[in-house]
Image (cartoon, helix red, strand yellow):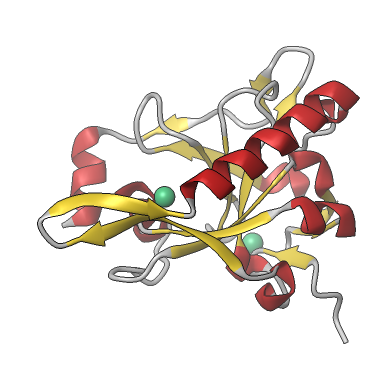
Length: 190
Ligand SMILES: [Zn+2]
Ligand SMILES: [Zn+2]
């Protein structure tokens, strides 16, 4: 049986695995926000709406690439948007990160794993649409606490430097971000 913690892009050129430790410390969430949806549509994935995008939040040091790490590409949905990493080979969305290696965080697309059930139960539902009201995040406190405790432990131990997404010396991402315009983003959501 394939290791359930193996992840890959659609075409298989990018392949890696998540450590058991990172799986245990990680938090599986689903996100209904417009940006996560726009990202899927931009990369010609099926439109998730009205459903969410399934994500597994971890420290980046838990990721090991077996191949294709150099094929990672980066886009942002606005000048200050999350870093949204995708496979340059086939366009598969792979992960989101914050914009600095000193804020160690990655939200991996759960669907990239051989068996996303191995990632555990869904602990939070972000930006759940509510009729006539602002979207709500269910499990927000748990999600934020887990995220902060992972970040703090990665910072204190120095493990934040083990990231596939950044050059830690310069703080620059390994791929130059393309930022799409407001109009392009709006067109994706029409
Ligand atoms: Zn989102
Ligand atoms: Zn690929």
